[in-house]
Amino acid sequence: MTLKDKVAIVTGGNSGIGKAIALELARLDANIVIDYLVDPTATEALEREIAELGDQSIGVEADVSKIADLQKLVDAAVSRFGRVDIMVNNAGIETRTSVLDTTENQYNKVMDVNLKSAFFGTQIAARQMIKQGGGGRIINITSVHEDWPMPGNTAYCLAKGGMRMLTRTAGLELAPHNILVVGVGPGAVATPINLSTMNDPAKLKQLDAAIPLGRMARPEEIANVVGFLAGDGASYLTATTIFADGGIMHSSVGL
Ligand code: BGC
Picture 1: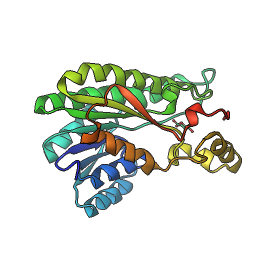
Picture 2: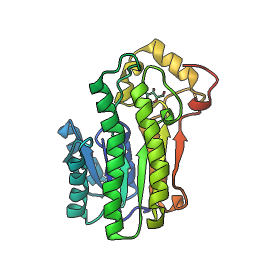
Picture 3: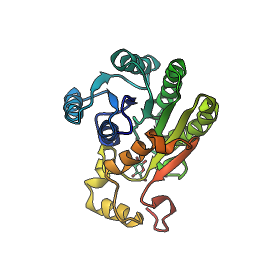
Picture 4: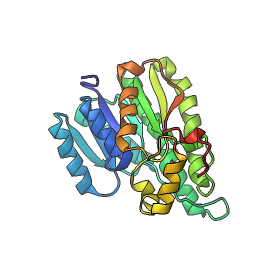
């Protein structure tokens, strides 16, 4: 299979899009480091699912907003599997607060979990990839909101906009090392981050109506894109974002 002998780290890897990515990369035969912060039981269940696919994985509890914890993820990958080939900066949170209401704590948390983690995750993984040689892939899970304003979710938009420029700038800096840096920008995906919308039929109807494909994405539909970007077929893609949003960014129906 395409990712045989490759090692991937997936941050926020035990739920939502991250879990689907961990499973897809394992399906393609990579070994996986599953980063998680809460719910060790979910991580263990995922490890068993990956074992059933014939691959190996380890769950590592790490807070990706801390540099030392990101280093712990890379160290775990190297000591268990010998290397890091694919770093998926996926962990993300949102507060759904406007510029008028967002507190300093909310701001810091959103920036740290989404953006700081991706910046230093890129740095620490790239240092390891350069040390081992042979290039690598860094895949940043951003959002349509890396480019598209979302009133009422300001800090999140800032963080995702930052990830957009991280992808582009680090992509240029790391190109000489054949480390490709790519963003994946989902629209609305059926994951825990969107539970409040999914549990409110009126809001869900409005959201579905604004999506040209007429529905939210399944997490696997985002993971499929990541699987492609991690493989040989994506060898000329860097410093850009692939949007997988059902057309929502260009929709003429307002949210
Ligand atoms: C946000 C969701 C939102 C979606 C589409 C995502 O990045 O996390 O809350 O529904 O974008 O607007």
